[in-house]
Image 1: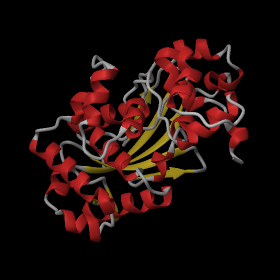
Image 2 (image 1 turned 120 degrees about the horizontal axis):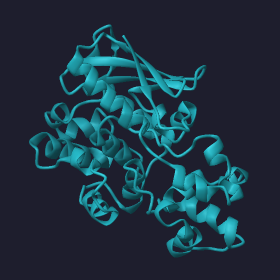
Image 3 (image 1 turned 135 degrees about the vertical axis):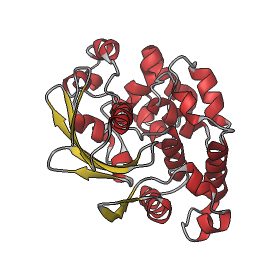
Image 4 (image 1 turned 30 degrees about the horizontal axis):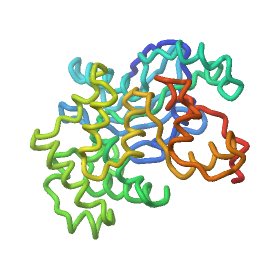
Length: 295
C-alpha cells in the first residue's frame, strides 16, 4: 500500500537521511538513487512491515509491505512522522542562520531534521553502541542484534526488525557479550531492555516536548551506559538543541575555528556557540566544518 505524508516546509528527505549515521544501521538501508531509505519495522500491534520511503511533493511517499488495516496504518503514520520529524518547525533557526555564512545553506538545503528511530528504546540502545568504539564496530554490533533477536519480515525472512525490549530481556549477559559481541556494553543493553520490558522505565514518555532539557538530561544520564556526550546526542534526537555534544572532534574543530589550534576544553566550545541559545546544538551540528576534514 502507498502512504503520502505531508511535511512542514521546507523539507528535504536526502537532508534527513544524511543528517547522521543512523541510516547505515540496521534495520535501515539507504537508497542511493533516490536519497530515501528502507526500514523494517515491528508495529506495536505486532506486524512486521517494510517501509520504502521516497521524497514526494511537500513530503514523502511510503510504500508499505504488507498492507495494513486502519489501526496499523495509524500506527505506521505516527511512527514515520516521528522518524522524519515531519512536523518540526525550524523557521526561527533559519532566520538566525541567515546572518551566519557557515549556516546559510541550512535553510536552502532544508537541514535541521535528524533521522530518528520509531522508538526511543532503539535510539538509546544504538547510542550505547557508539560509545568508545569505531563506527565499523557499531555497525557490526547493531547488525548482530538485529539478525539474532529481530523478528523477520514475512515476505523476506532475511530482513528483520529491530529487536523489542521484551525479546532482548529474555536473553542473558553472556550471550550478548560473547555471541552478539557487545563487550562491556552487554549489561547496559540487557539492563535497559529489562527495565523497559518490565515497565519500570518508560522511555516513550521522554518524547513529551513539555519536559525541560535539564530534567530530560537528568533522566537520560540515569540510564546506565549513557554519559554526557551520549545524552547530548539523544537530546538532539528529541528536539532539544540547547546542549552541545562535546567530544574530541568538537574540541579540535572549535579550536581551529576560533582559538588558532590551541588546546581548549568544554568551556570554550560552549562559549563559541553560546549566542545560539536554544539552537546551539543544532548550530554546531549544521556548521560548515568541511575544510577541517583533513585534520
